[in-house]
Image (tube, rainbow, N blue to C red; front, side, top):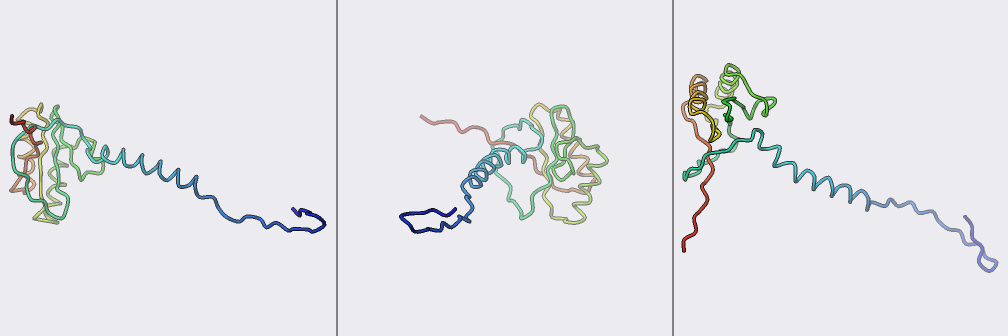
Length: 149
């Protein structure tokens, strides 16, 4: 790697720097992918919530326990090992009872699909009552605000 210029030898040093630009590009692509997929993972089971003009409940520090009832009447539990997999009634009662024993102030919510049978949603509330839950919140979505002219 020696170069000769007009009778003098000039010694060139090797570059020992790492080019980090490709790593930054990969990191930014991964960041965008995670930003797009994170909201999809948080939802779990897709249900069409009924609309209601209700006030939001005051949230505690811990995330609430959410029992979801889909339109077919299957139950899902957000604290389950696989929240997107339906859960049996006995397992639902056992897991919610364990949460209530550990934290009696835990917030319990029911998300019922608007096309679900009313009996299925009430059935979920009965199972929660069997687990020792005294207060249950119902999850709805706010109706669209009408424009006044």
